Amino acid sequence: MVPSRTVIEADGRRLAVSMRGQGRDVVLIPSHGRGADDFDDLAGRLAAAGFRTIALDPRGVGESTGPEGPVTLHDLAHDAALVIEALCTAPVDVVGHANGQRIARCLAADRPELIDRLVLLACGGKLPLPDLWARYGELYDRNLPLAQRLEVLSCLFFAPGADASVWLDGWWQEARLLQDRANEAVALDAWWRGGSAPMLVIQGADDIVAPPGNGHLLAAELGKRVSVIDLPGVGHAMLPEQPEEIAAAMISWLGGQ
Image (cartoon, rainbow, N blue to C red):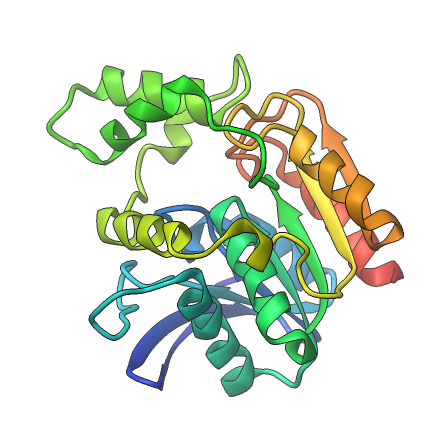
């Protein structure tokens, strides 16, 4: 299914989104330094199941821009809120992958009236990043040998034996640096609990960037608000590793709540 594209202009922002399908709205927020294209497969599956998907290009990706000056996680959450207000009838379901799930949880904390349910893919936050994270910036340097970038990508984001080459493209340096500053400017407690929305956590058992212990900590803290699915043989990238299983779990949960 070919997506339709539109740009939302509000509060000094230009926010590009891709939309598929018809039905209940599901807003998709991508991973750190990446864009809406990461959701192409998942969005197609959700659309086929009767949902309308709205995948956001964060600031610094493609046509999406925001006001100059300091930026916080609350500002990135406000970007998503503007998209919801422009295109949807709230409350809606929101899916965030990796850094996108931080933005989703911050949005749910700041604007709970906009959110029905949250799906958190690669639910990080409390457990420390691996030492290998120091090499993460190599993914953005196209002057480095391809084999070197692929090595870092494979070790950081994919389970052993997975084909990491599918994620070699799609890294946006401006978005990465902006999101780093935004995360540093806001304390964990401001977004960790995700407002009051029910949450489905889908996480990879082989994720070293957002270790699966994060999701279990969240469930232990919030009880019945949180459902957790651990996927064996899945790393941090998740979406290209087991797309069928992730989509099926989401469709079942979103359709059955």
